[in-house]
Every structure is written in structure tokens, then in C-alpha cells.
Image 1 (cartoon, chains in turn cyan, brown):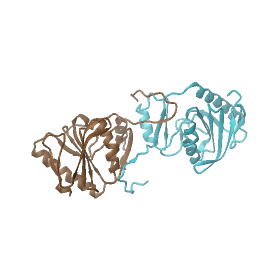
Image 2 (cartoon, chains in turn green, yellow; image 1 turned 135 degrees about the vertical axis):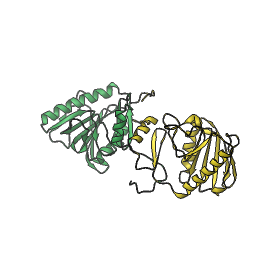
Image 3 (cartoon, one colour; image 1 turned 180 degrees about the vertical axis):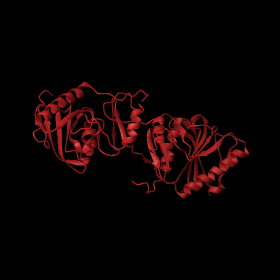
Image 4 (cartoon, one colour; image 1 turned 30 degrees about the vertical axis):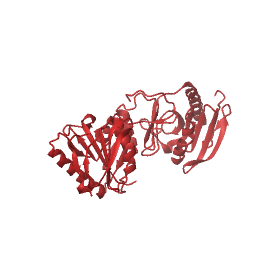
Length: 189
Length: 191
């Protein structure tokens, strides 16, 4: 949209990252466990349970160790914000990235892999979030489904979708398809 | 967030509060837009107002001002002033009749006697969603001026999400407010 378009029917305003930060700093989201800016809309959860946290903790540890072992300059991060455009600032459960800045969201182009842990959120993570990450060109995306005990692995972003995908049951090793030499065991899941 | 929310582990949209909306407004976030409103925790904008709507608003404003002056009413019509309707609603009605036109900030709800929206492309939203929002807040009377059909929908007696009473007047007919004693408005200028 440009301001030259004639808009006389009210449209939803898409919050920008600057708006989101301003509200966050004002304390507007105090009391919410986690907020994210997704395509101009702030979404929040205010609770997280141990089944989700356990899988998240395990995958984070394994990925961080695997990154060190692979020696690729990649690091795993736990719930950091990634900048995917003027109105999108998600906070994935785990991010694997290189050259993460100290005091800013990680730019999308430095992100190698995003992992979301889904308990109640599988539909959102496999639908809207997959579209979001593919559109931003995130090379690889995993959704660990706590209930189905499986990891949905997606890679080769093409437009709004990932061209390649497979499922790996908890317990089997998961080898990243777009990161040379990165593989994690999931036996303790 | 001051309100107590049920526990949710799935992401839900966060409803913005009036103070969030005002903070964004002060920051200049809405400068590209002509008009913004906070409705049910979400911000909406328009950037244009076409002539039929602007003219209808001006005619109706004049008629209301004349009628209120003649009856020396303490009510004053204001155009495009935001109303502090609820924690998550700050609409900007086309015309609002308030007993407190002076003062800082938003128009307080308790001062509002009548809200009027001028509808062209917005008719459906004004008749449904806006009517529900105003009724829920307890706004005593609500008029929707339909520029295309040349008719004014008059609603009063708010109850929950709806108005219990409704009638229509064609442009040109004399309008009598249902809840403001002695207020009748000539709508000949609209015809």
C-alpha cells in the first residue's frame, strides 16, 4: 500500500517493529509469557508447560553442541527475536544463526535454522509460521510436535512454502538438510 | 496487561488498550493516515474521505448545532473527536454530542448523548460492528446516516450488544431524537 491509494473503508493497521518495541518498553506486555509480532499483529501466549519446555531444552542443548562440533560458526539461541521485515518480529523457540548481534534482533539472513516446539500450536506452526519463515527465505525449519512425537523437517524455501519436507519420529537422529555436518540425536526425547 | 487473562499456550492476538493506542499516536505512528480508530483492541485506518460523506457530515453538523443553540442545550456536536468508550475501544465518530466539549484528551463516555456515523462504503460496519460496540458501551442513542440510500437509521435503548429500538427517517424529513428531550433536527440540507 502507498499513502496515495484512496482508502475510505477502514483497514486494519499493521503494527511495525518500532510500534511493537514502543509498546513493549511501556510495559504493555507485562504478564504475558511471550509476545511476537507476526505480520503486523501482536500475538501472545501467557503460559507454557513442561512437556513443551522439556523438548525445547533438549533440542536446544543438542543443537548448540552440534553447532560447536560442526565448526561452522553457527550458534544455537533460545527464544531470541529475529527480524523478518518491517512488521514481523517472531521469537522462535530455538534459532540457529551466525554472527548474532549483541543488542538487536537477529537479521533473517543470518538465520540458518528455526525450530518451533508445538504442543497446542501445531496448526499455527505448520501453517502461518511455515509461510512466514519460507517467505523470509529461512533455509530450514523444524516443528517438533510434542503430541505426535515427531519432527517435521522443512527446507528449500520457495515463495510462501518449503519445497522439501520429511518427518522424523522422536528417537531417530535428525540431520540438517541445509547445514553441512549438523546432526542431532533425539533419543532422550 | 492489567486484565486477568485465561491461560493460553497457543498464540492469541493481543488486544491493544486505549493507552497503547494513544502511546502509538503520540509517537507519530499514524501520521500517514487521516483517521484511525481503536475498535475491540485493533487499530483501523482510512486515508481518504470522499465528498458525499464530507458534505453530509457538514450539513448534519450545522442542523444539529442550530437545533441545540435554539434550545440552549449544554450539548455540543464535535466532529471527528475520539471517545474513550472502553478499555479497548476509542472510536472517532463522524459527529458526537457531548456535554463536555472542553478539556484535554478523549471525550469521556459519560458525557456522550448521541453518536452519529456517516456511511457510504462503511454502511455494513457501521450498522453491525459499530452498533454493537456503541450499544455494549451504553451509548444512549446512535444514528447511521446512509448517504447512498438517503436515509438515517436511528437506534436507541442499548441492551448488551444491540439497540432495542430502531426507526428510519428519509433525508428531508424532520428527525426527533429519541433520548434527548426537545431535540429535533431539520434534514432538508441532506436531501
